[in-house]
Structures are given as structure tokens and as C-alpha cells.
Amino acid sequence: MSLPLVSIITPTYNHQEYIADCINSALTQSYKNWEILIVDDDSTDQTAKIVKSFHDRRIKYIHQEHQGGYKLATTYNKAP
Image (cartoon, rainbow, N blue to C red; front, side, top):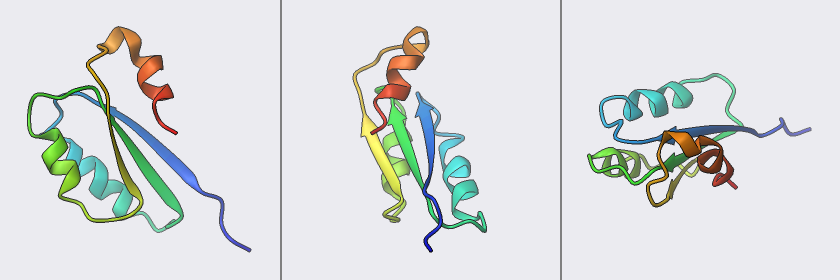
């Protein structure tokens, strides 16, 4: 029997200082059947470059035009 898939939805905006730690935290979990859906709210720093430097099929990068924090629900809903 396969283990259930756990989806980690991570909205981000200009979090270049934290996003690698966030991804590495998921990568080091003992439970392996997960995906991390990183929804980038049009970051202007190196967030996208850092996310794309990870080569793991479970890490999915989703870019959207800037919505701002007041539309966080919309950002969460971008995750498939």
C-alpha cells in the first residue's frame, strides 16, 4: 500500500534568505511521499533562482503576478 501524498503549500514573496531552509526542511523529513508547491508572488529578489536550483521532482515552482498579502487566499488557491 502506498503512503498518502502530503502537499506542502508555501506562498513566498522576496524570501531569498529563507526559501532554501524551507525546502531543505522538507527534503530532510523521514516521510518521503510529499510535494512542496512554492507559489511565488512575483518576487523581485533571488527567490525564483534559489528554488529552481533544487532538482527534485517533488518541488514545484509556481509563479504568479504580484497579488500582495491581502490576497493570500488567492495565492494558496494557485497551488494545483
